[in-house]
Image (cartoon, rainbow, N blue to C red; front, top):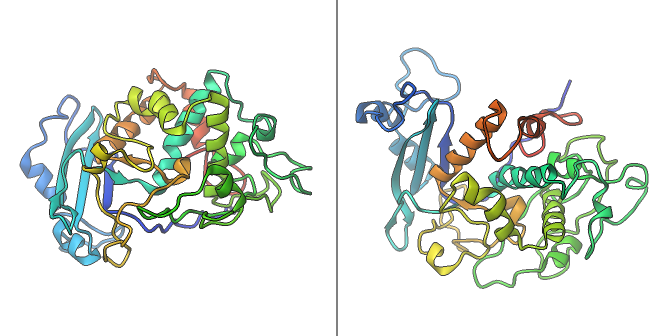
Length: 333
């Protein structure tokens, strides 16, 4: 029996939701969702299992329950984006309201976007899923040990969390704190607040979530392309997909920072750091809107259908293909 990947609990910012597959309108009706239809969604939230007659909840009730000050929601149907709505505050201190262009920190949702970019580099021949990454890395290499001597780590391993690499996730760095270099992160050296990234399991033998693996993938992509990761991702994914407000810049430039949401802890309290900086961009550094994230979801669906101009159907399927002992593909799970 395959092992179900554990849920990923992150110290996250405000709720950011792209609702996928909710059919509110027929084909060609994406811009015509009625206010009544939208209100039924906003006031008809239910748990995964419910009974006939259960009243359900409103979005406002759930926001109050979880202490979430602001939410952005985008719904897509067969034709693409059906509607976007925003609610509440992006920053409780300033009183700034959530807008459609408010940027939220996507956390681990950064990974499928980064994986999409990596797969585009595989398609254009700059990268290979199955080549040992140490053959291409220059400034730093995964230290060899008894595991890597048996099975070298590949890009496929990195994207599917099967490389045996350590470091589950990253906490980020509050504004004003010292931010480590890539080498300091990889080696776990101050001011990095995470351990060194190492292989301690046989690559390919089992699934284990590793933000560290995606950080190695980030280094690989930047060294092979010769471009900073934010610029590379703008070229490979954000711009061609139409994610016009999104960015992997960490920290955000001032103009985008003005339109960003402040962080909130799982208990509903404000994060003292407000907007954390993630130099581990592929693992956790995406800033995005619900509409931009929905555009990415639509592009991925088109790739799976064979109609994307950005990614081949075979590559999209490879991203969803289960690896090792878990139902987790290369970027998605």
